[in-house]
Image (spheres, rainbow, N blue to C red):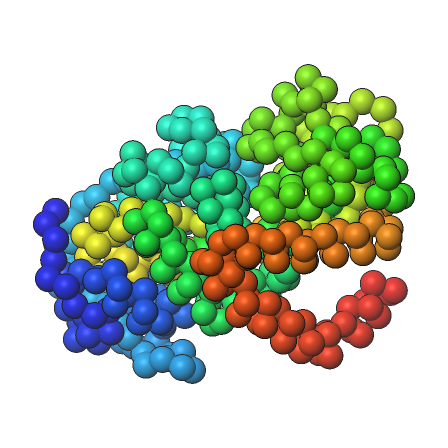
Length: 409
């Protein structure tokens, strides 16, 4: 495949150019995110006529803040097959399932000409090595959680979830409409030569499995816990010890006695991965204050992304948005059933107010400290906090009283 002439995404799409490339800067700043491409979903779904000729495109409903666009799906588009490294064991029907769902949608939207093959963690690279491998073009695509890579830069935290941050609905709002994805992709382009899109969310997570009750900050002293990202710095500031593990590595760590507590997502994933295999009494705490709403990502080297035909780029964005919605729905259906199983052998506990207050205070301290040392992190943190506080006020007015009543039914 050769590089195509550079053109802005709006021009390429509006004029129906079949083989236009995306200039990295114009793409990242154009604001033509998933919402803009969503209008073209029906076009990509059925855009060839029965006799094999390319059918005329029809514009779907326009986004409220962008003109409607369409992409003509060419019959002679190139046949491409990519490998996708993931951070998930194949047993995770949720997250590895999300990668499979995404790949299936890309294939469907391109008439089977663009195939992406998700591989479970360890088949290509380890679960915590996906982003560096995509960055180095050691694989053509990745499906992972951005905050696994805060060791490369703390900015990575924003791609997945920030402790005491945004709920799932709020995270999607920030990414798609609040400028979050544009800021992150600007960073990804400069730091890694990569572009990424949300392609799955878990909703608010549980707070993890423990073999003792946690009543005060003193109970955290010396506690070795599998916990990701900057939340681990919060735990360590309060006397605990962070252990970073990919999902498939948690059970061996439990069996070897290397950790005293662990979290992953919620009932369904936790049971699949065997997080309930600690010996002795089990306490299952909530909420997962470090992940009130998440995003996992599909990631691509920009060198390969820029070579894709415009309609294949559009298919990736639409498939990612579809996977995001599908994964959240899948979790909400599965977790409610599996929670009933957990209740049969574990005690469900809410983190006491004293601990939650300490976690919250230390989270803000950690965020401030990281921002003081990292200008790029600080540049995102300030507008992110403004968005968080504003949307929290709105959702508090609009939803909190209803949710409080609902939980009392």
